[in-house]
Image 1 (spheres, rainbow, N blue to C red):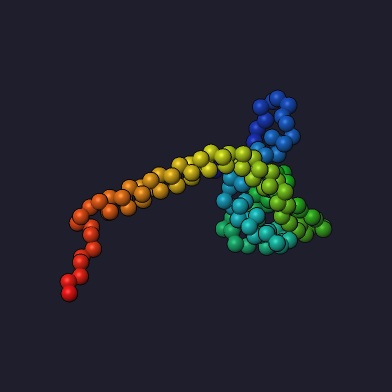
Image 2 (cartoon, rainbow, N blue to C red):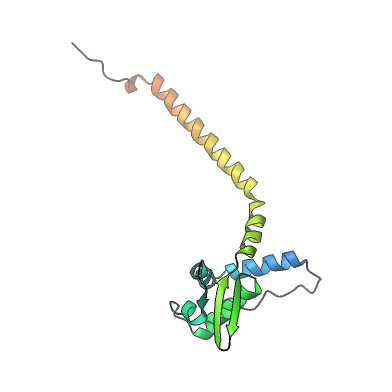
Amino acid sequence: MPSLQALPSSGEAEDPKTALLDRVFFALSDPVRRQILERLDGHALLVSELAAPFAISLQAVSRHIQVLVRAGLVRQERTGRISRCSLDAGPVYSAAVWINRYAKYWQEQFDLLAATLTDMEDRRAGKERRDPRRRSPRRRH
């Protein structure tokens, strides 16, 4: 099981945007954390409410929440012993922008697929016109 701790640093001064992106992708890499984010969509929930559907301890859920907090994906407000969590989707936007830089490669693949399918359809239509066995039966009067 991967550690819930932040990713180790290489020892070099890292760009803050890069470090945040690393924390966001690390946080999103775990299915429990993604489910926590889904549950927080549009809701502010207590840690105990977030933990309810999971078959793991409250302490384990709290550790997952802390990873999300460090990534900037969750805001946690404490009032005494009560801790309420809410979603902050801003860092997800940053991750989406980073991923979208590679959309041009996906688009090239989709364009190639569309051209191939069109070519296959054109060949099939041409073959049907030339193949005498494919002619529709003539009506006899």
